[in-house]
Length: 140
Image (cartoon, rainbow, N blue to C red; front, side, top):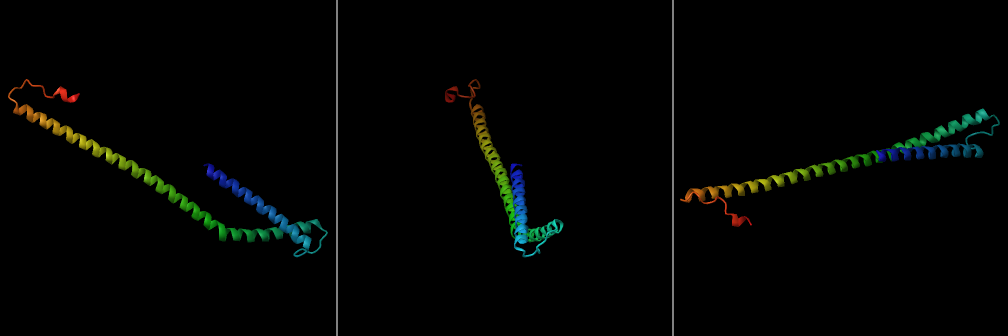
């Protein structure tokens, strides 16, 4: 969200910069009388300024489309690929940990079953049924 706000702020500053450039270019063109004739009527001068700034803005827009928009789209695409790969890696890591825990639990289960089988066999083999099933000295 903050990155979108930063992008909007950057676009606003670029737009303001381009507009100030357009006004300056129109004034410079009028001052040098390159495009405009020397004119005393301010309505005509304003119309000529608007024509000059529109012309310069069209050129600036074409340059933006050709050089910058594709690069920005490529950068956005690359950022989305990176974030997707990070999410995929986190998911794979979680699945790997889950698998490792299940293997560990399976190993413990087998060990417990072997111990139970051993105790069961020991109980069946002993003639004296009064012996305790588990030797308490081994648990310490």
